[in-house]
Structure formats: structure tokens, C-alpha cells
Image 1 (tube, rainbow, N blue to C red):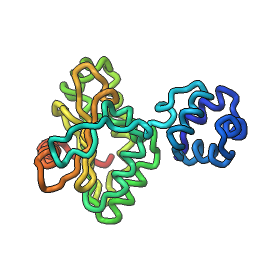
Image 2 (cartoon, helix red, strand yellow):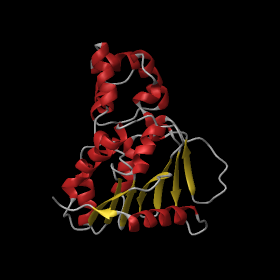
Image 3 (cartoon, rainbow, N blue to C red):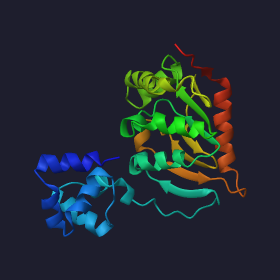
Length: 247
């Protein structure tokens, strides 16, 4: 997966790999790997490169933004991020790619996954082929709750079209053994991205788009209840959701 933001900034500024490498003090191959393989430089090197390009450091390499240190009150809390935009899509992809038994996704649309990682369906097919149960719950675009969320987040009718777009992205998975897709019309308080005993929880804040809302990373340890609360929430929505039929 390439770093499209870095490549676009380099093109717009007329930077070649060799020129940026010389300015930063690294070899040309390193810059090529940053751009074409999404390699992340060390923080000091990245800062010099970002300054040379006139671009925000974390816009080029979001993974360098560390989760805010918190005094955890639960042994299940791995990390807390101020907003979903701080997480590179590789965090979601890596989490899904490591799943061995279960993948659960509860969202309204979350089209950012397919947009940033077009091979997501291939990844899900591969996990299902290895025995993973994959459950995808998407928002029903005709639901009153979806329309209300659009009004609250100032998407208007945009969120309804994004729900339809999300279903279009996932529809090729219909009929894949081990994969099921359903639509729901619930009031979504959190989006959930679960892989086995880990889950990324994207909170929803009134008037704020999901990418600007906090995310916490939980891992089931047997010593807390946060993870199981989220898992039970998914199951409750899933049981009330409607299966998407093959057309």
C-alpha cells in the first residue's frame, strides 16, 4: 500500500525521490519506500521531510501520532486516540488480518476502509477461507435513525448515499462462505471493529463526524467488562438486523 498523500505532495511541489532524499539526508531508496510501500521514517527524519515539503507531519505519517497517555482504569484499555483520523487505515487492516476466529464490523457506512484499502474484500475472503466468521452490519439508508445522524453530523442526505455506497463495496462478498452482511436501523452510539479478542471502538459525538470522534482500543483480558459490553452490543444489533440477499 502506497502513501498517496506523500506522493501527491511531492508531485505538487516538484520533488523527486533523489531531491527529497538529499534534503533530508537519507538514500533515495528510503524515500521510495516511504512513498511506494508506506514505510514510516523515524520521527526526526519525518519532521525534516515534512518541513521541506511544507506539509503537516501527521498528515503525511499519521502513525507517528502516538495515542494520548492515559491512566487506565481498566486492564482492557490498550490505547486511546483523540480522533479516528489519527489512526492510519493500516491499524484497521492489520487488526482484521490477524483475526483467526471472528471479525465483526458495526457501522453506518465507514467507506474510508474501502477507499483507503481497496483490497479489503480480498482480505475478508482470505480470513473467511481460513475459518473466520465475518459479520458486517451496515446502516439501512432508509432508516430514520440514519437520516437523523446525517442531520446531526451535517451530512444531510450524504450519509444515506454513503450507506448505499458501503453496501455496494461489500456486496461482492455475498455468497462467500463464512461471510454475512446485514443492514440495521439502530441509533449507533459507537462503531465497532472487532477481530477476535480486540476491538476498536469509534465513539459518536453529537454534531461531529465519525473521523473526528475518539477511538479506544480494547483487548479482552478476562479482568474487565468493557470488551464484553461492546461484544454484547454488537450481538444485539446483529440479531435485529436484516440479512442482505444476493441480487
